[in-house]
Length: 165
Image (cartoon, rainbow, N blue to C red; front, side, top):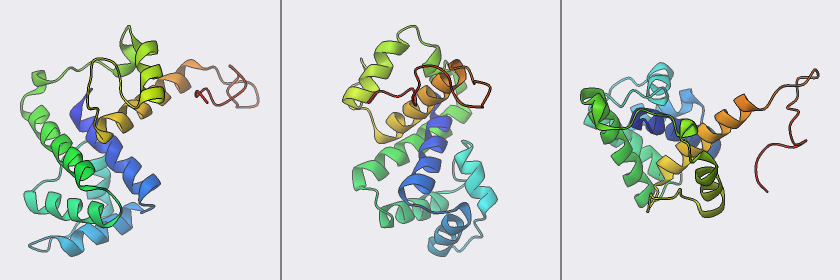
């Protein structure tokens, strides 16, 4: 899984779904805690969510502080920080990480079941919150793309959301 994509997906999910912050609100919160004070805009937040790591240690530290203040535990913050470092490494050494999409793997059914039932996928002990969120989003995109859209604009397969209950 691409580390930059995992970092960005987790940040977007945390911001919108867990912390209930708009990009503008997160930008203001990060800018207020940055040292030295630097203007962080919603466009910068969008770049981070698109996989561009924070440009400096000060930006990252300010973002991590805001994440802690909005409910992330220290282990989750540490996992996000590790994902940011991996995204930085991936930019400089692109061959360091597998480039294939999770949804393209031949064992995707086994992985999807493990992600939804056990909170991690086979062969990957200690799955971090960042990788789990990124995997769920990647699987959701793959399922959505695979299920045909009916005439009324609704998904037609299975009669439901397509997610295990």
